[in-house]
Image (cartoon, rainbow, N blue to C red; front, side, top):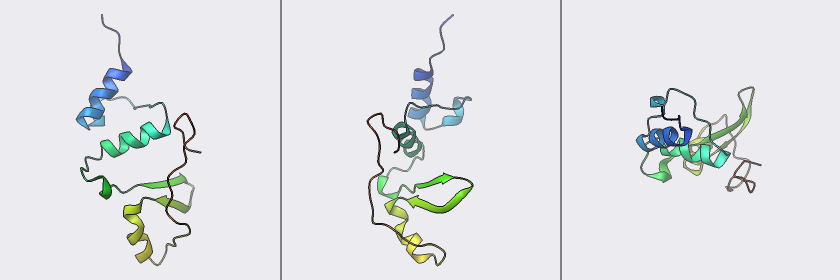
Length: 98
């Protein structure tokens, strides 16, 4: 009997961009890998159109971070304010968000 391989199973799911085919939650080794997987499986070919939102947690959504592709939408929404300039997400040397 062959051993189960998370690596091969995840690779197949990510390649097909259909995560539900795995039937187990995908656990990746770092935040950067999780973000890349989310982008890949969005099936949006034009990466400039990727819309990402980062929240601290579902109980604290007063402040959010949004991708550049969402800035105009934020500026046009009277309930939202842009508080900083664009910046790259900070990752540590292991690929986890700081």
